[in-house]
Length: 79
Image: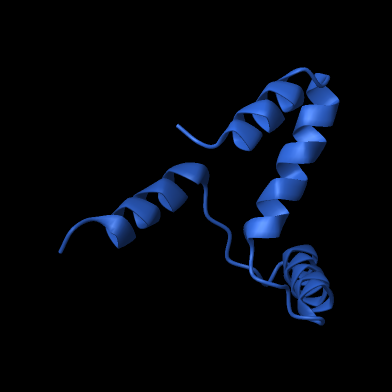
């Protein structure tokens, strides 16, 4: 399974320390993602701050974990 180069690389990678393997795994996962839109991080930061502001102001409708799970199951349940 896989080329000799892949097997060699895998063997080398598994000899790395746990933090080094985690960093490598993170970098590899990022390499599989589509290129991020240039303004995406800023847009998410603004959205997070907006939502935190709603929570602080008491205008957000919060739900507990069980309600979240119920809603998620309802969304993914076969029709």
